Length: 177
Ligand code: ADP
Ligand code: MG
Image 1 (cartoon, protein in one colour):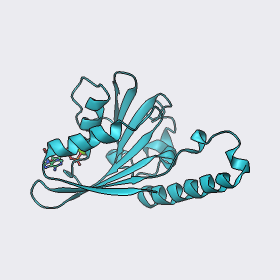
Image 2: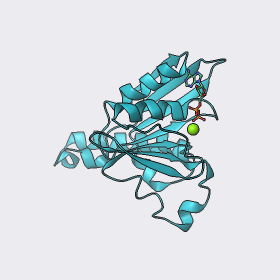
Image 3: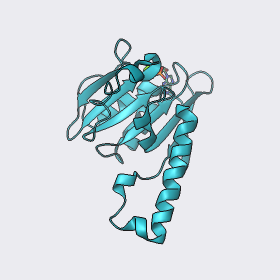
C-alpha cells in the first residue's frame, strides 16, 4: 500500500492533485476523501471531475447525499455521507446508482459505515495546516479483488492478493468504523 504526502498552498494546487489522481482511475473505482469541514475535500473532487470531463461545476451535495455527473468517457459520482446516519440501513440500495460499476465515485465523509466502501481503491486524507496550506495524504488501498488476473488465487501471488485485500479492508475499516 503506497502512501504519498503532498502539501498544497492554495485550492488550485489541491484541484491539480485531484486531476492527477483522476488520470489513474477507471470505472467502478471508489475514492474515499476525508478531512474536517473546509479541509478541501470538495475542491479536490472538483479538480478530479473537471479532469474526467465533467462540464458542470462540482459543488457540495449539501441537500442531497450525492450527485452523478457525466464526464467525457465515464460517469462521476460525488457523495457526501455527512448526513447519511442510519439512512443506508433503512434503504440499502440508496447508493447503488452512485457506487456503480460504470462510475468513478468520490466519497466525502466515508466514516459512515457503508459496506460498498470496503472496495475503495484510494484513501485521501486532507488536514488543515494553517491559512491556505493543506497536507494531503494519498493512500493506495491495493487493487480490487475483481481485477485479479484469472487463476491468481491458486498461486503464490494469490496469497499476495489476499494480503493486499486484507490490508485494504483494515485501512478502510479504520475510516468506516
Ligand atoms: P470540504 O469539502 O473539505 O468541506 P471545500 O473544498 O468545500 O472543503 O472548501 C475548502 C475551502 O478552503 C475553499 O473555500 C477553498 O477555496 C479553501 N482553500 C484554501 N486553501 C486551500 C487548499 N490548499 N486546498 C483546498 N482548498 C483550499
Ligand atoms: Mg465538501
